[in-house]
Amino acid sequence: MDVRRAAERYPGGDPEAGIESRHAFSFGPHYDPGNLRFGALIACNEERLAPGAGFAEHPHSHTEIVTWVAEGELTHRDSAGHETLVRAGDVQRLSAASGVRHVERNDGDRPLTFVQMWLAPLAPGGDPAYEIVPGIADATPYAVPEAGAMLHVRRLAPGERTAVPDAPYVYVHVVRGDVALGAERLGPGDAARLTDPQGAEAVGVTPAELLMWEMREMRERA
Image 1 (cartoon, rainbow, N blue to C red):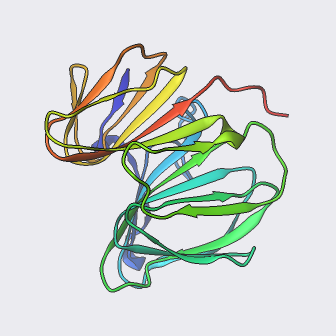
Image 2 (image 1 turned 180 degrees about the vertical axis):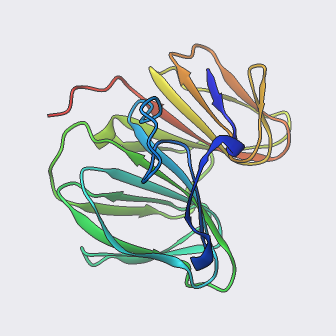
Image 3 (image 1 turned 45 degrees about the horizontal axis):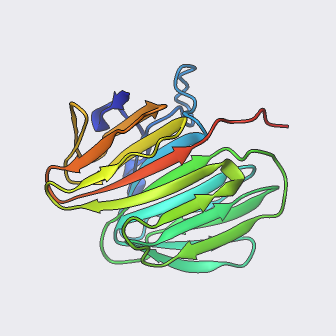
């Protein structure tokens, strides 16, 4: 188990424009050859947007982009004609495939905080696709077969336990609250990278919300 604390994330964004970003992996101008990916996961960004702030239209390709809103509302628009409002508890996925452009903004009147996770697909190409699952229930898995991955959302009460998936790669990200994972205590923004965990459990220390990625072995990409 490799624990990465919130304070270790790489800062980014544009604070003067109301955008504050914290990156778990190499991103943009920050390049660390030892921290490029874990399993299928190539980015896990914590984003904070002030009211009226946002990311102008920009392109993506060959990436599965999954977004989890922690606070506020995210406005999404893309070149395939989708325009949605993503709220806390919704799972949004944009499959960039051969190429798509999108806009992400905080058009609300209060701060927006979201976690955006990028996964490498098992094979490149295909047509872009978009999906939003409103108000996903606790412990309901969300599959991303294009990346050989599954997202587990857990909301834990103090003392409540949840099994960590037995998989080649598991990435655990704490959205809010405190969680015990083995001998480690994880707080908001902390993450753990587990390789071949067997029988591991996460326990709520306080009321907590966590995201767990279950990922299988990666094939060589074409």
